[in-house]
Every structure is written in C-alpha cells, then in structure tokens.
Image 1 (cartoon, rainbow, N blue to C red):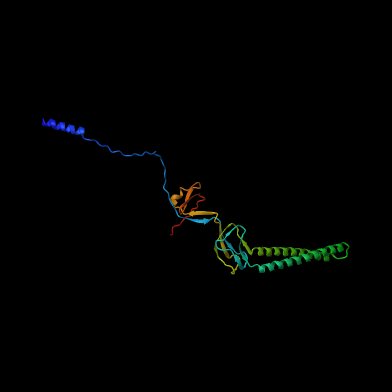
Image 2 (cartoon, rainbow, N blue to C red; image 1 turned 90 degrees about the vertical axis):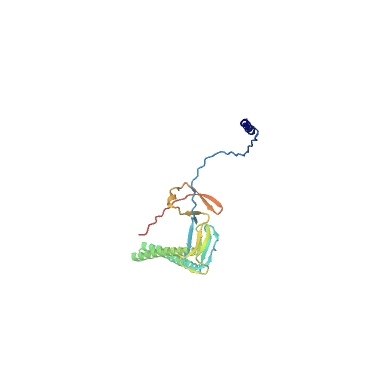
Length: 240
C-alpha cells in the first residue's frame, strides 16, 4: 500500500507542479550576399601637372618680381628687368635703319640717273656697274639694319617676363635689385588647378590596376575618387 501511495503522491505532485515559460524577443532580417576585397591604403604625393621654373631671358637688374603665393593668369607679368640700356639700343638701331634706308633711296635715284645717261652713251659701262653694285650693297645694309632693329625690340620685350600659364608662385629664387644673367632662375610657377597624385605601388599589386580603375583618394576626413591616368614602371638593379 505504501508503494501505491508513494506512487500516487508522485503522480499528484507531477500534475499540480506549476510550469513557467520565459519569453524572448526575436528580430528577423533579410540575408543579403556582399562581395568584398582587401583594401590597401598607400601614401602618395600631390604634384602639379603644369610646373615650370621661369628664368631670365635677358641680363640686367631685377626691378620687380611677383610675390610668393601670388596667383597669376596666363600672360600676367611675373618679373621685370631694367630696360634702360635696351631702350637706348632700340633707339640706336632705329637710327641705323633710317640712315641705311636714306642711303639706299639716294643710290636708287642715282642708279636711275646713270642708267638714263648710259642709254645716251654719256657714261661707260663700268660706271654703271659700279652704281649698280653700290645700290645692291645699300639695299642689303638697309635690310640688315631692319633685322638688327627687330632683334633689339625683341630683347626689349623680353625684359618683361610673363606667365606661360595660369598658376601660383611657389618659390622665388631671386629678389628685386639683384643682377641676373640669361638663364638664371627667377621663380617657380605651378598650376594648382591641374594636379595629380603620384603613388608608388608594390609590384604585387600593380597587376590589379588598369586605366579603367577608379581609386579612392583620402585627404584627412575627405575622400575623393579619381581615375588612373597612367602607369610607369621603374627597374631597380641589384648591386653587384
């Protein structure tokens, strides 16, 4: 009987024992497939596609030079060399040209007069030949004087050095008051509107690059996209 009561108690306890269930919130989401590839960030240098070191084209003392950081448009004055001596040279060559022209015009009229006399048998052929020779030499002298005058004008114009393209003065290698010779550097002009980024890419990554790639360029907190312009390889020879 005890065994039966014990079993009954067990059965009774199992029937009346409370059962508790805990609830948990469940969030569902759509599963999507994404493809990713390794990202490599490399340090690069920002350089201008237009950069020129502007040099003096005539010898002389600098009387004005553009300031560092000064923006310029194409054709703007960036340096001026003292032009006093070259101005005098232009005036001198102009006088030489006028004198040569005056002599040429005189000999031209003289030749016409002697040709008329020669037709009348009033002068010899040798006199006419001499006149024709002097006329030709005078014509060459006049032409040479005109060329020298143009050369002097060209040198005078070169005392005013102008920007070949729009840009900013990035460096000054001379200063006002200094004497410069032909070819001496004056300033460095760079075009800040035409820039590119130069990056040295490891050879194991170069095979993934082509001219259709769009590359991310990060400048601080800003990120830009730019297209690959060109690739250039450099061979490094091992010593020995």
